[in-house]
Image (cartoon, rainbow, N blue to C red; front, side, top):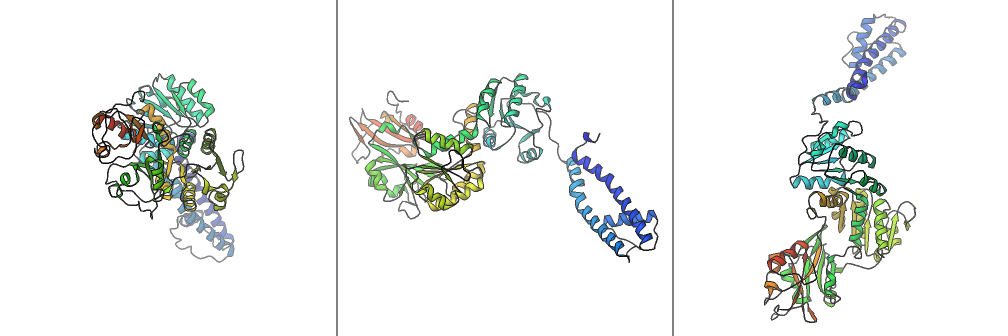
Length: 550
């Protein structure tokens, strides 16, 4: 019968039953002790009164002195028992009972779901996407099993429904009117959720985040629209950041052939470039290179004009002839593109990173604290001797695929202090830890939520609605309205954010332009910038893509 009550209510009922028993028991013991040990008989009522006063610490009245040692010991124990009960009763029994009575109760059924996205369970993998959907004006509802987590989500302003679909099938009543469903629970709960939603006539998009890739095909068969494994997607994103063979930093660079390259340089505080404006440095005129922008705190900041200032600690991205890029090396440290790639951590993410790197022909050196197949060096990445054995100074990149964000921050600081030139890429669990990783020295940090948010946003918000990182792009276009103008004197950066980095004329590619140079009919103009800025350039200068390129 008691099972029908809440846990706090059952506790309070038990307390109300135990306390009288304890008072009566102590009273009887006190009555016998007073009679046989002290020789001063007490009635049962007076003895119960003493027990009540003792347990509640309200005083003793006339009974305040005892002579027999056993009686004194009994009284001392009773007094401490009373203190213990006072300090335990309220936080353990009374306060939870009243908290449950006066706090707002969680709804146990879905609201009207028109236009809403329903998330089945909350976690780091969906937190980023919920925030993006909220900013885009799409209302979200979270169906959560854990009441403590649900309370935290409600305090953050989320709309939460509490319940388990396996125990209460009516929880999904009305789900057929939802805009989309996202399930990120245990794979077995995901399966139940998908099947029950389809049984209720839901015909929209169901996105599932699976723990085990082997379950993907089964989830698709029972009704999921798309199934992703966030840990593997995160591993792929980290691998593409570490290797140019997987994800080249600039799309379309091959259009320029071998004559022009792209360079990445780390700007230290002592570099003559640090803190300077592009307009003062005149990199084009002095060195023949075009600065595209800089990576700072994991974000690419496009160079938008002469007032752009180069920060200390950033990675500067520049385009130019290889000989001209070599001149910049005297001003900043080049980012190594050759050498092994160190992968710290051999969990699900680390395994995927190493697998993709090796499939792409890279040399991946895996470090992990535990020996296992695929681990090259057994040891703690926080130990400099382990880093030395792994050859961190010869590495082209270090990928921190650690499962704990705190350990990742510490490892980033240690690696950056020991190998300041190496490209450092880190995995984090929660988006809130990204800034900490950058502060500790990581060049790039990706969270599970960012990657999962990006891949899910393709189905829920449109392909480009959420972008984890900005990608650079080259485009070869016709002169358009740039015809007759100087490539560096048309305020291109200010108007579009892109930059003209080269002009192809007959069989020559020009990357430096004197004052008399003008774009002529028949020229092909090479423009570089983010995907968005290149698109703006094409619209602003009516510059059609070269035939055969899209």
